[in-house]
Image 1 (cartoon, rainbow, N blue to C red):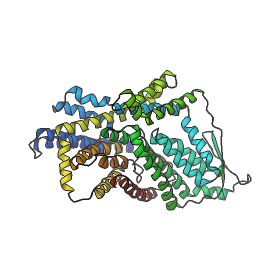
Image 2 (cartoon, rainbow, N blue to C red):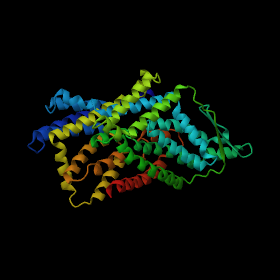
Image 3 (cartoon, rainbow, N blue to C red):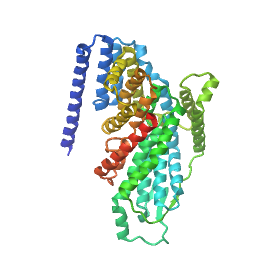
Amino acid sequence: MKSKLLKFKRGIMNKNTLILIFDIILMFLILFFFPIDDLQIKEGLSILVFISILWLTEALPLPISSLFVPVLAVLFGILDVKEAFKSFAHPIIFLFLGGFALASALRKYELDKLIAYKIVGLSKGDFRVASFLIMLTTAFLSMWISNTSATAIMLPLAIGLLGYANNNKIDNNIEFYTSKQSEEVSPRDATTHRCNENIYAFLLLGIAYSASVGGIGTIIGSPPNAITASFLSMGFFDWFKVGFPIVLILLPIIYAVLFLYFKPQFERKISVKYDFKIKNSKALLVGGVFLFVILMWMLSGKLSALFGVEKYFDSIVAVIGIILLFSLRLINWEDLNNSTDWGVLLLFGGALSLSYILSTTGASEYIANIVINALKGVPTFAYIFGLVLFSIMITNIMSNTGVASVLVPILIATASQLNIRPEILALPVGIAVSCAFMLPVATPPNALVFGSGYIKEKDMIKAGFILSLISAVIVTLMFGI
């Protein structure tokens, strides 16, 4: 077994090494032999192709690939060292860092679980209501913490609900039991419920998809949101006005499609008894800071005008939130360090740096002109739908952050050449990359629920494909009309 594992790892290493070698050769071929006279454009294109291949194949970890961007910009003479690295201190990075800090505090004092258990307790024994509330809660949590964490919180809760007939306990905090006059459940009934794969697939896939869609709701909900918003100079509330309605539209559609596809049968009434309480008075302070920061983000437009701050006031609010959490001794550095995905912050810096390079060299304008010439006569609506569907499909096998980092700056330049608002093209793609529903490897939530062993891959592919098409239509309608 160990020898097979070693061979597998060596195979991956060999494959990634070959990709890296091919990528380097291709970069220099573009640099020296691409048939245009402008050297700066060739430099920009060569860096774009090199980084895009690394991001899309993940031959190297995405954050490490991002570090190539400033290095190549300096070595090619496009930027000086200070300019090349300034994107790694972009305000959007501190906004996301504030999101990590809030998520760390919520998790430390288990406020995220408290929210989950309280909401599920509102089901009043109806499984259909309980399952929708679980999906709704997952989406809500994913707006503020990572979709992976939201799924990890809700998964055992859902499995406990599905296995209620055996009086299973979840995290020693919540117990599901039948309300049918305390009668014992026969082994046959219990087996029937345990083996009803449709029920499990319906609810567990609902959790995974809700986590992905919920992340669309806020600028800190998913890395592609922050990348897209930074390119479009959107603040927290600007994104919320766009993203949150999409969550409200897609969430019931996910529920309905999965319900119609799997047709789960769950006749017993359930009661939900939870014994989950706030164990630390500091949790109330965390809740206060959380609500304060959200309120400041919602009012950031008026507050920025009041203080004379033209752009990125949301990042100031995020840093204030971090300072409050530390000043009130609610979290420490270890808490923040453990909950922060530093790789994501590096990836932001690389994506923003690449966009600056493409703009500076004229490469983005060059690509935009090619795209425009290729799409002459194609209606804008059809063009947006094609972009959205392509983004959804490719994100099933590639990093959604990498896809957004590559496509969004090019689309902004294309929109500029077409004399249309950049958000018409860039926003649909920035949102669509969070709608990867088809494969277990597409997103961490998909992988988590698939790893539970209750879901067949063919069911995920079929249901995910249906939802992908519907999502593509909805996102296109939101921006293409």
